[in-house]
Image 1 (cartoon, rainbow, N blue to C red):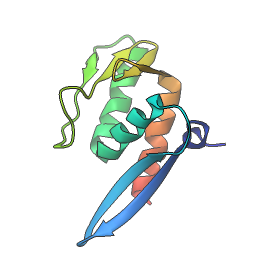
Image 2: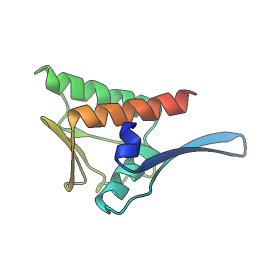
Image 3: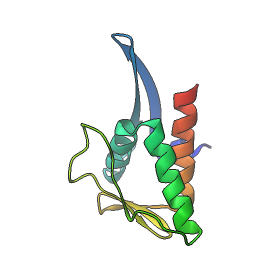
Length: 114
């Protein structure tokens, strides 16, 4: 079972006016995971790779940004991704282990690169 399946997430790709958009949908019953799906939807591939690197830095005891900022028009001041070893905290409510978050991000990157 993939990590996205474990979290009840589905990835999709749509083409509108020659622009490809990637989306993440939550198909389960835990309302906290909706915020995770939204974060992945608004993240660009570069941001996913950047968050993975920040997590790796934290794991290695190196400098990391405690609050990972999304560079997106859809992001707001309330969109919070906090790196709090050994976890990532989404919107001050959903706690995900570093291992799971890295796997989810890598699965999303792999989907976008297909």
